Image (cartoon, rainbow, N blue to C red; front, side):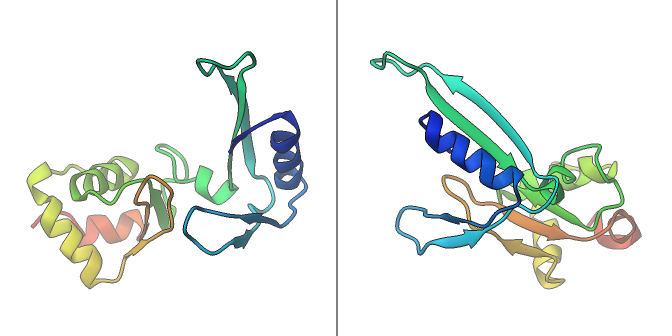
Length: 146
């Protein structure tokens, strides 16, 4: 979120208090959400040309989303990615589980994920996020390598 001090403070308070808030994306219906307990918040400022004061911003994520970063929760069964590009999906999943892959496997990998119903599109603004559901054992037991 980008906004003034009061907007950023209000959203930060809602996230840290595990409150329910409403998200409105352009051209979409409003979504009622909560990031749950132990959500992480990162606040900062950005200088915008033509403005006297910096714009404030807040990035907030659920504890579940934070566990999908590389090196965290290597046995996790869900990986959330910001892009659905086949090469990106293959690389990020392989990196998370420490598996060797080749970029030319990407089309095959995406077909396998789709056939096994192990990938789901998520709602994003300016990106095409996906959820990949599988464990490291599932990938190492025959899902990697055409």
